[in-house]
Length: 133
Image (tube, rainbow, N blue to C red; front, side, top):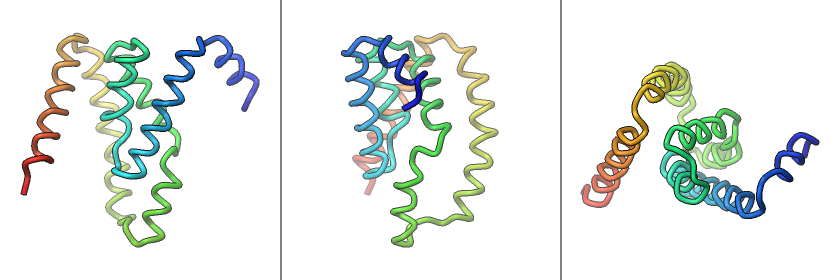
C-alpha cells in the first residue's frame, strides 16, 4: 500500500474503514458470483452505513469501477468460455459515452428525486427478475 493510502486509512475512523472493507468484499463477491456490485450493492450500503448522499455514493461507486477491479472475475468466466469479447467491447465503448452523459444529468437532479428514481429502478428490476418466467 502506498504512503498516501496508509495516511488516508489512518485519518478515517475504524468503524468507517470496517464498513468500507465489508462493502468492498461483499460487492466483489457478488460481482464475481452474480455480476452485480456497483449500483445494487455499493450505492445502498454507502448511503445506509457510511452516510453518503445519493450523489456521493454514485460517484464513489463509479470511481471504484474506473479501475479494472473485475478483471480476475471476467478472466475466470473467459476461461470457461462465457465471455463474448466483441459484444463486451461495443458495450464498454458506448458505456463510456453513456456514463458521461448520465453523470451530467444526475448531478443536476435533486438528491431526493434521484434517490427515488434509483430505488424505483432497483424495485422494478428485482420484481422482473423474481416474477419473470
